[in-house]
Image (cartoon, rainbow, N blue to C red; front, side, top):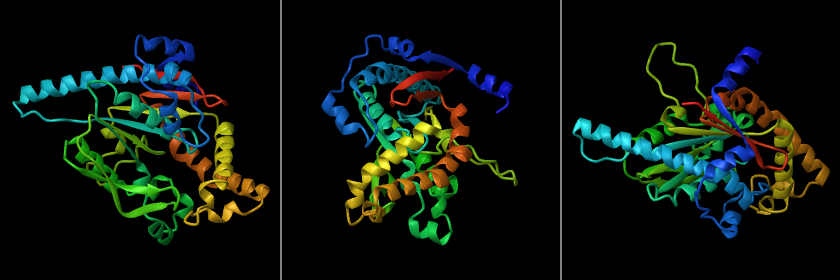
Length: 318
């Protein structure tokens, strides 16, 4: 990246050290227990109560302020228009690489935000459910690009976000199984006018090129009120991905229904070679081509160190 461009990107953010960000917690109460945290964290993604206090409580305080301000603006607009009382959910996007810890971050955020009095109803949806089924990906030659933008049903995802943002009742989202590595047929989750919707996915901040014919178009991030990019060094991401893969060999890979069942039985050295090859061939390429370039579009960038702890926080200037 050109140094001048890099400096311009960095100048768009307020940068905080871990201790500086932690000080912004103020008197925000800790509402999670160790038991809660053990249920919320993902495999191979350690997180402590100290991490919640230092990073997530200030973030939940900030988001509570943003949501309250947005709710106030919406109500003022409704009064101006003479419209009946409605409800417009606040939508938060969470982006980042495979193995960086997006799921843990999203679940912890959901738990904390749901404890604020003005946002009791917080829902979480991952874009995995909007992947095309494996049968479609295989027919289109896209199995090797699963997780790349073209492997998603973008039209269905945009329709879902449009309906949620419009306050439509009982909007359905498809469900994805990491066990079978496929969309679950005839299964969905229902999102019914939440106060906050968290949308987690690899490429949710990606903005494609507008159509050449001049037709109006929308991008997923157009529906976000706030967005978080979770960042880490590539070497750490590769290490975490391989560690997770090796741990899954001892757990879910042993399930007869697992798509990756065959890797539970191969020698450890072979399994590690396969994990590294998958990372390099698919996940690292997706990171370089589609995910990392969207970092500068996030409202907030959280950067992890090798121990999984978040070391720096960058908040976009208003």
